[in-house]
Structures are given as C-alpha cells and as structure tokens.
Amino acid sequence: MDAATRNTLGLTIARTFDAPRELVWEAWTKPEHALQWWGPSHHPATKIEWDARPGGRWRNCLQSVETGEALWHGGVFREVVRPERLVFTFAWEEPGERGVETVVTVTFDESKGKTQMTMHQVPFQSITERDGHDEGWNSTFDRLATYLTQESGRLQFFNGRKESH
Image (tube, rainbow, N blue to C red; front, side, top):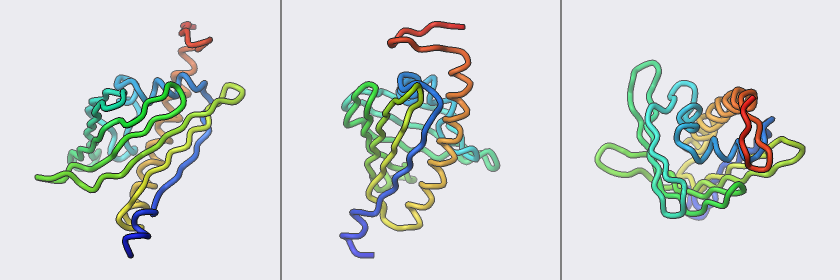
C-alpha cells in the first residue's frame, strides 16, 4: 500500500441512539459514564482517565475477559464543542513505545429526541488495522446503545437540566 492510500484509509461509523444528544454527550465526556460502555464486549474498559477539554489527555485500559491481558490506549483531545463535536488523537501503547496515532472525530446531531452519532477515524496503516478497529468500535457502540437505554430510563433531560424519575 502506498503512502497516499495509507493517509486516506479511514473508518466511518454512523449510529442512531434513542437518547437525547445531551445524554450521549455526557456518556462520551464524563469518565464515570465512559467506564460503563467503553471498549468492545471482549475487552471492556477497567480504567478510564478522561480530561475532555482541548489539550486534555485521555488514557484507558481495556482488559481481555478471556486472558486478563491489559491493552492501554490514549491520546489528546483537540476539539471539544459541547454537545456537537469531539476530536481526539488515538494510539495504542505498545510495550516501550507509543503506537501509530490516528485522529478520531465524533459528531452528534439530535432530531426528535434521538441522536445521530458519526465517528470517523483516520489514517490507518493497513486494511487489517482498519477492519480491527471497525469490529472494536461497533462492539463498543453496541455497549453504548445498551448503556444509553438504561440511562434514558433513569434520567430525563430538559434544556440541559437533569430530572430524576
């Protein structure tokens, strides 16, 4: 694969969640929420360090449910536009070095109480790497959908104000 192809090899995933945008935003930007859904089902997050502000760092540990192996990854938030857009770097922490960095952009659009989330990640070094992230993100977003359904049942958001049922 040539350098030009690598620089454009990206991944885009769009999901519609049956939850208001403010709740989806909170799930993405608050570590106590992210810990409940981050990571694919076979490698859920066990530790989240999350400073969702421009220049803020994030670092998470995913742990294999089969072997207990810990996989660390992290990056830096580049843009945080509440409740519309997150842009952050993403890299796996390889033993003794940091892996190749990608940039993740997540947008949130609300319509009729539902949230359209679009995630784009670029560039990948190979199709295999991209496909691995595709599988991992889709499993992660399945977990996010489940979490949002649970949270929507507990909280209602009206004009940014939380009201418990």
